[in-house]
Each structure stands twice: as structure tokens, then as C-alpha cells.
Length: 583
Image 1: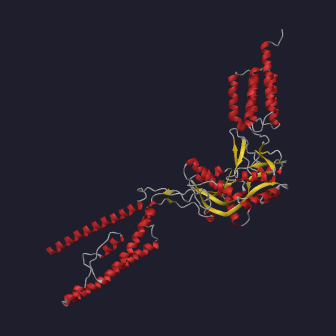
Image 2 (image 1 turned 180 degrees about the vertical axis):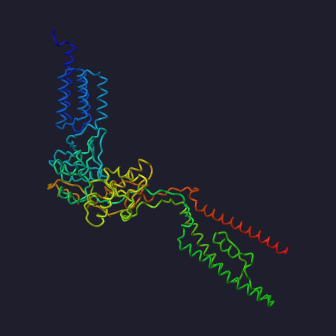
Image 3 (image 1 turned 135 degrees about the vertical axis):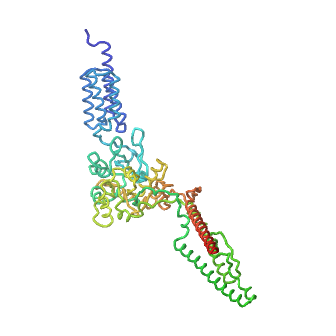
């Protein structure tokens, strides 16, 4: 009997077709189709193992996949493992098609990040490819706010570059006629590479240039002695101040002291001294007038007594001075010139001071009060042991501070060494540490990075939780790095200087700078700030008037105490009078 029945023949033909498709997929895998290639290979193996129960064929497929993965193909170890599970399941007759698909989906989508221990050679993505340009350069790229942003599609494939670095490189390629591609080292699912090595799976971007795998790095590189030995540093073109990122001081609307804020301490002291001087002067002049009145009364000189006009007993000098000072007014009937001069000077003083006070008081009542910032200068960071300095691990600031032997940088290095968690693996980790309570962490980085984090956090939370506190340095020059003894160094230096001279780089950086309003606004540092923007109207609440009500409560309490004291003294005086009359 012919062992090849019709059904088996069609199965074999289907297997041959699928095997051809599988081999074609393996041979035509594109570096930009990493996820699609894995899915195609997985489905192909599933179909093969479902329709062909041949032990030799399934084993051959598994060996082929293992060989491709071992040679650095773009098939990940997660796909190899998934396919092997399918092969073993079919060989042992342990399940149906549903069981196999469940295992494949679970392993592929859940275990791929953990099973992908090795990554293939990073793909090179052509950005500018002009046929008549003979020079082809390959660059590694590292994202940095304002300088470089890598745009990717849904599958993680690099689509284009954005930012000042992209504009500068594109201008240089047109000026010196060369094509360039990007070595997508940080493309998913590969781990993010920093400039310096940070473990066995992170050799650092500089190592790719040193090994000759690319011609340069599109990254904002701080010049250090070690990096100068390994790279040819291009003319610095990116300048950013070094500053600190801190949590925004808490806002308080409890304006308890708003009633005393309009005047400084010495103004209040002189005001009370002036009030006491007026009272003493009026009492002194009134005492002299009363003596003259008594003298003229003893001599029965009615003509001179009519000229003398003392302050009446019912008109209290103390209440007059206090009433005019509190804008309540008062009255003194004396027409004597000396008293009129003193009273007129006091009225003029209170008129001016009260109008000034009322005008300034509104500003302090409606003002938003912030608590004291965590730091105001670099000295606060170094002097306060309760403040912890944090920064990104392996970046320029970490290298400079750690290797400094004297001066301010040495002190900053000591500050870093005193705190075991002072180095973060990512910017987001540092930002999360800043937000932890109690607030003790300050994050050091370039000002443009801090602005980008403020902008990102505001878009995410809708609140201003971060702000920039102090500037450590006026400006830090940064630039790219090329391979050692690169023949293109002179062209890059000349082109960068030309862009700096004609102002194109400054224009691009100004246009691309993160807009941190309304959380942080520095007209000199934030060009997107519109000075003509009107401030929003502030609605007064009871919290704004806490100070005024507190003063009113204190005044009412004093009045009640005075009333009770007067009632008690009056009661004892009347009782004393009755006892005296009886005796």
C-alpha cells in the first residue's frame, strides 16, 4: 500500500510551503521589523507543528531557530523558547491547538522582557541618503531636552530626529555633503544606554565609538579628561546653567501677619514714638494752659481767661490720638495756636500713613504666600546636613565632582559620598525622590533638563510641584564626540563655529526651549514667557483676611476686658462711697 495517502500528500505540500515561507522570513528579517519578525516566526512554527507531527521536522525547526538566535539574528530568545515549547508539546502529544496557542501567547508576551538576555547588533537607520554623496557617517544618539528627541512609530522603529542637534547635523550634512545614519542602540527592547558604562548590559555609548562601530555620538557631552582621551570632542555649542530642582514651597493663604507687613519694623516703632510724642506734647501744653487759667481765675481777669482755651476734660487726648491713628477721627475744641499746630501735624502724618498703609495692605492680603524654599544657594546645600544632593549616575557632573580634589567641586563630591542614594539611574527616579516627604532632596542638572521635567510634571499632574531654586554656574559648554583621530573633526568644528556666529544655534535653542509657565517663569531664561500676559484676578476669601479678623478679635477682647475692669472698679468705688457715708 502506498504510504503516501492523499491527505498526507497535501499535508506534506502544506508543510513544504510553510517551511519555505519560514526560511524566507528568516532570511529577509529587517532590523526595523524586530517585533513583526518574531511574530511571523512564531506563527510559522505553530502552523508547522500543528499540521506536521513529524519528530524530525519539528526538531529541525527548533535547531534552525536556535542557530539563528545564536548568530545574532533579530529573533529573540523569547521566540525561540516559545517555539520550543510548542515543539515539545506536539512531540509528546500533550495538547491541542488551543493549548499550544495559550502557551505561545503567554510566554511570548509576558516572558519576552525577561527571557531576552542577549540583544543583536543595533540596527542602522538611514536619515539622509543622497545618491551623489560618497561620505557615509554612522552616529549613536542619546536624547537630551531641547538638543535631541528621537521619534519612533508604534513598533518602536526610529522614524526621525528632532531638536537642535538634528538641525545642526542636517545643516552640516548639506554644507559638507555627506550622508548619515543613526545606530539605534537604545531602540526597544534593548536597555537604555548611557554615555558611560553602567553594568554588563550597559557598556555605554562611548564604547561603540571606541570599538569603531560608529563614527560619533549625537549627545550632549561634558568635556572631562577621560572622555578627551577616548573621543575627539567637537566645538561646544550647547550652553546651559547648572541649577537645582526642588519641590515647590507650600502655599499658605493664612495671612495672619498681613496687617503689619505693609510697614517695616522701624516704621512701626517710629509711628508709636510719634504718637507718644504727640500725646506728651498735648498734655504738656494743656497743663501749662490750665495753670494760666487758674492764675487768671484767681486774679479775676476775665479778659485773659477768654483767650486761654484749654482742652476740655470730656475730650480725651489719648482717645483722640488713637482714633485718628485708626482712621476713626476725633475732636479737640481748643483754639490755641500751639495745640492747633501739634494737632495739625499729627493729622497730616496720619493722613499720609493711613492712605499708604491701606494701599499696600490690599497687596499683602491678596498675595500668595509660599513657605521658605528648601535652598536658596549652593551654600545652603553644603551647609545643611539634612539636605541630600542627588544627580544622574555616570553623567558629567558625577564624574567631575567625584574626581575633584579641591574647591567647590570637592565639597560637592563629599556631599555626594555622604549619602548612599545620591546617584540615580534615571532622571525620573531623581524626580520621584524630590517629591517624597519630608522634602530633603535637591536634584542637580542642567537648567534645560530641569525645565523639561517641570513641564512634563505639570502636563502629567496639572500642578506645580517642582521649581528651580538656585543656579550653580552661569553656563556649561557641551558638544558632540567623534571617534579618535576622526578626519571629519575639522569640518564639524568649522561648521559649528559658523552656525554659532550667524546665530542659528541660538535661534533654534530659544525656539525649542521648554515652556515652564506657570510653574516657573524667568524672563531671561524662558523665552516663551509672554510679558504682556495679564495676571488673573484674585478672589478674596476669609483666609486672606485672617490677619484683619485677628486684629479685630484682639481689639474686641481688649475692649471687653476694659469694660469688665471699669465695671468692677465702679462697683467697688460706689460701695466704698456708701461705706464712707454710713460711717
